[in-house]
Amino acid sequence: MLPHILPKENFDDFVAWLMTQGRVAAPVAKAPNFSFDVLVDKDDIARIRMDYDVTILPPKKYLLPSYETLLDFNGPAPENVRAEIDARPTVLLGVHPYDLHGLQTTVAAFSQDPADASVLARRKATRVIGLNIASYANDEQFMADMGTVDPPDGVADLFLTDIGDRYFVEIGTEAGSEMRRACDCFRPAGPEDHRARQEYDERKAANFKKRLPYHVRYLPELLEASYDSLLWDAVARRCFSCGTCTNVCPTCYCFDVHDNLNIDAASGVRERMWDSCQLEVFAEVAGGENFREQTASRLRHRMFRKGKYILERTGKPGCVGCGRCSVHCVANISILEAFQQIAGEAAEMHAT
Ligand code: SF4
Ligand code: SF4
Image 1 (cartoon, rainbow, N blue to C red):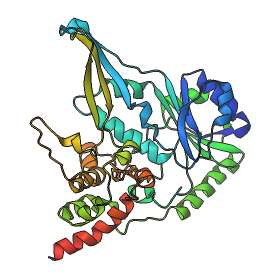
Image 2 (cartoon, rainbow, N blue to C red; image 1 turned 90 degrees about the horizontal axis):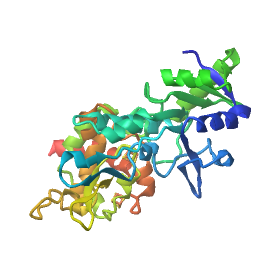
Image 3 (cartoon, rainbow, N blue to C red; image 1 turned 90 degrees about the vertical axis):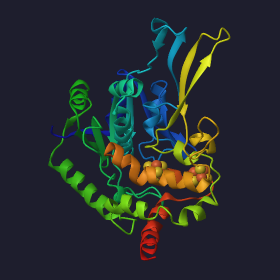
Image 4 (tube, helix red, strand yellow; image 1 turned 120 degrees about the horizontal axis):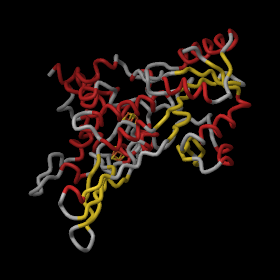
């Protein structure tokens, strides 16, 4: 499908049209950071910041909310159990490529047997409009290494690139094609527009230098080789086991499930909420045993999830290099730094 142009003077009309299709979540300022927020009314369009650097939480929260009710029940009989799936039509506007990869990883994880009806229903009800980036937002990002500076195929229905007074719009799906046809804000892209898009790519290629000292294909093996390294103990001495790093991560998807019983002890709701492998109780099982009692083993587990396990399980990146976990870590623990260090650690372990 050939690209189109969305003149910036039509942007507000475009968003107003999107708001007729469902709730629209877009990047807005949340000083001193940015956040994806649902637009309440047309006046809210003025709050959109398409020039944002990176949001505090990724847009994953619209597929996997931090809290949700999965079902309500009134007694144990199956006919008295009712699934609750909140899958409202939603448009995610302005999603950067690394977060598009994060959405893809989340969907891949929840598509595995048994598939998760809630997450998949929300994905089905969600349209995604991606937004290109031309440079890193901070020193903790490493998307060039993780292969996430460009969008994955088939996630964004439309993908926008800012080329001055207009957006270059690439159409990624049939739904995107329908949006383009249904909204009269677009015009076909001409030679000047294509040239501007090429120039954007050239600038982008020059800006995204790799930050790992090795190719990411070696990351799972380097992690494996550094399993017994003292690095994990050294880093863990600074860790507060607060779980912030997993809460802000676009590819973390661990959750807990509780049954909340009413006073009749027969009816109630089943609730799901985000959990974190960095919390001490996370790996505790019946009888009080804990598989990962030590902070170091929890921290190492997170690094292995990000660099090895999720990739092996879903075929999609377990870390998209967005840098959020490092930027928001109260102890300044950097996943980029850890990944940089494991090459030396693995060599050292191998030599002894
Ligand atoms: S945010 Fe930092 S201090 Fe908190 S659990 Fe994660 S690594 Fe540890
Ligand atoms: S592990 Fe950190 S850098 Fe990687 S995707 Fe999660 S938040 Fe981003």
